[in-house]
Image (cartoon, rainbow, N blue to C red):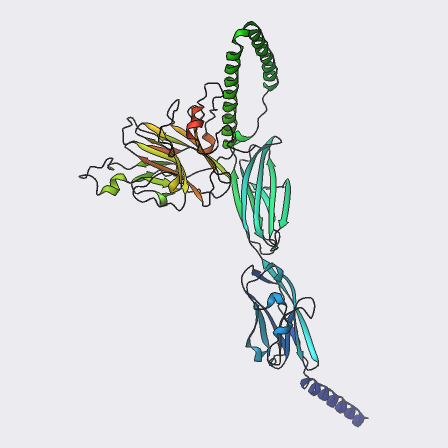
Amino acid sequence: MVNSLDSSLLRDFFSILLLQVSMWGSDSFLVIGPSEPIVAMLGTDTVLPCRVSPPLNLESMELRWFRSQFSEAVYVYRNGMEQAGEQLVDFKGRAELVKDYITEGRVAVRIYSLRISDNGMYKCFFKKDSDFEVATLELKVIGLGSGPHVFMVGPEDKGIRLTCRGKGWFPQPEVQWTDARGEKIPSLSEDETQDDDGLFQIEASLIVRDSSKTEVSCSMKNPFFGQGQVETISIPESFFPRTSPWKIAFAGTFLILGGFVVAVMFLAWKQQQEKRRVWEVQKEKKEESKAKGKTVTQNWRKAKLYAAAITLDPDSAHPNLILSENRKQVSLMENVPQNCDASVCQGQEECEAVFSVLGRNCFNTGRHYWEVQVNMGTVAGPVNKWAVGVCSNTVRREGWFVEGPEKNIWVVAYEKGEVKFPTSPESLSLKQHPQRIGVFLDWEDGDVSFYNMADGSHICSFTGLTFYETLCPYFSLRGTGTSVTICSGLDYTENCPDSSPNTSVTHLRSCDTGAPQEAKPLLLP
């Protein structure tokens, strides 16, 4: 019985040994790909690696990377060379085999200049004789677009409507509004579209009704990559609509007064038939003057909706200028030569140099408004000069140059006791010289306008322009005691343009470089 048991154990041992030997001689293998998705940026290069286990020399095997169908070949390697005839057209010239470790069982396909269409699932197929194995890979193509750009549209539904735009994203980004404390604010609406390249363009809207939310941020984030961008906009509290209890009473009084005025005018017309033609001419001029004053009033108030927080850029300042610590004021350094006395100046260029500085905030889209305060000192001499406006960020400002449109500089200037407009040889006819000036820039409509905030009147406008470059706020000054201060957005004056018949309509005629102000409003409705 013992001999029988020993014989049985010996037979089982030989069976197991023969099975193990047969497995060692087999050509079976496994194909292994990455366990996590491969993430790559749009336009860059990436690799799709695969390997076999146990390690084998792959030079004599068929290697194929394809999409969902076997015939949709990304790259095919057979008989020791590439089989380009089986490759999809989209990958011709963009895919190659990385075979530095092919004898160790590790290979990869490199894809150049990734496109949105490359996003998705792939399979690598390895075949040796009649044995083959397949592994699956996932490629996520990421596109981080431009933006977000936040715009203040204007008053709407007892609040301020904001719009956040971004383009060039893939996949569709996550949009989130937040307040200054980081609390999330749901969007009113979100609209997204895809262009011909498959990239997403998105626009989200929000109406802010709480006047305490003076800072609102819009962020766009890639849902897979986790990377995003944020832009914040400040809303002055004064911009929020306020309900006045006197509106109804004022409307009733206005209707009564209007009826009374019409009755008086009718009686005057009946009593003065012989002077009818003169009276009608006077009435027409009066109504035209009121319409022009009303247009200026509406345009100036709309401009305030686009208030921008401007600060000075110390890197762009002339060496003879001094900037305040808060980058809001610029003044002239002491003992700077003010005339062309050869004994004082180092040369002609130093005597005639323009002392200028740019704003740190530059714009290549949208509408923007800011105000500046000009101080001429106790005594304004003939050498006192200043100019405010905008200029291209590529303008060369060394030495002396013309501050005018031919230099891509659009300003209103003060020189020799007169306020001047670069495109007009005559000085502007103003009711009073401006000390506080409002500057409004509409990049898309090609409009640069200036307002005298001492009386709220319109000074002049550049209209009908076409901008191709980024524009920066521009300031220049010369003369002892001259300084320019950028006003804070919350301190913007509440003066309103005079809508009476005495409004300085000559400002519009003598300054506009495009259509007359009454024919082409400053802002679209």
